[in-house]
Picture 1 (cartoon, rainbow, N blue to C red):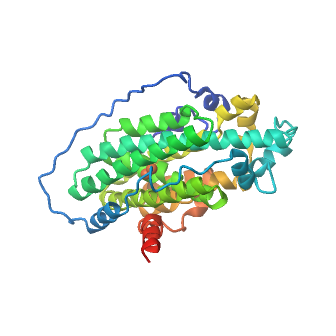
Picture 2 (cartoon, protein in one colour):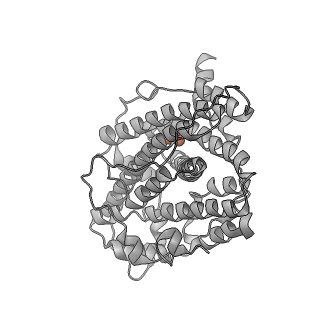
Picture 3 (cartoon, protein in one colour):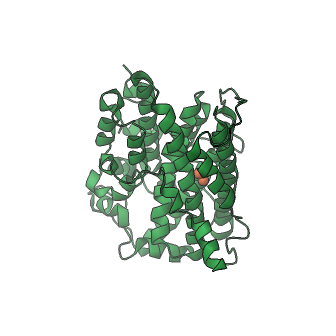
Length: 377
Ligand SMILES: [Fe+2]
Ligand SMILES: [Fe+2]
């Protein structure tokens, strides 16, 4: 039987010491190499549209391309303090309210100045990690072009490679030109990306990237898009989401077919991988590097954040609002005696299981077509 020690490298999901021990030890690193352990697969079956749902997605992707240089207005001046006051609204502590009230809280003496500073660092950090995740998606999707055996999936994945290049490009440009530069990759995120890229099985690339990393990104972008009024960031997020919704659909539609054929033992391996990814993503949102930069006791912060009761973690939970219904659609929740269902209960995210899955949702998200139709009307 596989234990949490085998899956996560620690016996207790909330082991404080083990979590903070995962830190980026080389922040000046420029090149990072990962063995990708995969065979490049040719197929001689060129029948286009053998998988109609993937073919439809491919045709949609071809007409919804956009240009990060010309479709966004980079002349817009960005005031980071404005973004933060929009995000924080009337309550500067926002998602950290419970932490502030904790008797050991390192944030209890925060005034307006510190809250604004924390807000700016947090958004810089968050956008930076999204940028690194986008590069992960670029690499994973290039790998899928090589490893997936179906021609319709190779065609579609090639359009996603272009989408991801554009996403890395626009996030990097926003951080460099409109913010104060970017944070290095978070060690939990890096660990997850390395795991996804190095797995030899083609479906694991999809599961880790399209279902987990991109599922989380789609929920997080949606949340940020809703609450920011900064026009450049708002349009950037709206256009990125328009692509991201297709990417998650690509994962759901491809794996639905493949997972229907797998044995319970094979499904269990996928469940464990899903759980590992979920925990790594939760760990990254502890944002250790931000506490460090703010001069706040990071160990204390991580400890309090890990103790926060589930009802106080609405933002963290919302990040799973796309992932859980998609896992359900793929049969991952209830295979192997509902192993993943129980694990999602433990980490407090099972409540999303009946929310809309992302198999078809991409048509509603297609902001690029909507704007073009409006412009030509
Ligand atoms: Fe992306
Ligand atoms: Fe994506």
